[in-house]
Image 1 (cartoon, rainbow, N blue to C red):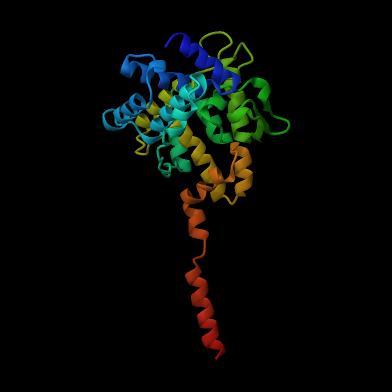
Image 2: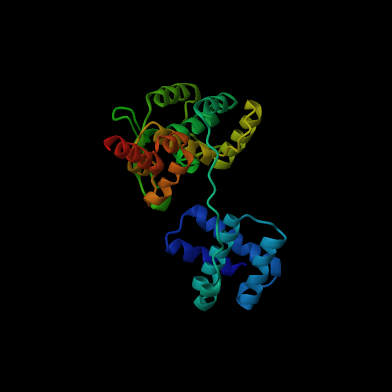
Length: 288
């Protein structure tokens, strides 16, 4: 896409899109241009619809990937190419809300024990122990660990928001042992290969996949599943859902509320209206 790609990148940056989102949008727009082998400025709605049908019928992409491509093309035409009328006509795909797999405490331990690399294991432990997104865990600095106050400072999270999360004593002890063994030279808690860089989330994800096989886990496990498990376990311990919302950094309580559908203990503690009706009926009969 050449100059158009550069302009789209600048447009995204000016609107303060996250670096990861910028990369995804540019990649999706590139897929569109490569499919037709024509500049997007020379194409319109028919070509866009043909490409999206190709993703659905031939590539068999999931709903989330389909939605990301639609969002990228909407931005490309609505902002960069200044054709908002085309962007408005593109329909958003319906994305099903599926319940994530949740690891129990024993499975979390098995997963962590199966991770061969100390650094990878500590990133995964931090992600679960504090409910962090994997990118947030990877980008931590040593100064973000506040042992006196028992807090972790999460900087520049999703939507550019900072927040504080709890620092578990067990996690603090493991981080101290990791620090003594690894001796990171820079400010990064989990440095990457290049000076000044941090470990890649993809590297941690790959390590988790290998650990899942070694541990013999049958569930689908990703770095984000550790975050889901953290939230669900807190809910099962009786933690207030608004506190969980703050810890996770969710902008809406509706996002956090989905964990009430996952927690079996939370569902099991909820009394059915049928029990109340039956009890009331018995009380009335006894009163007579």
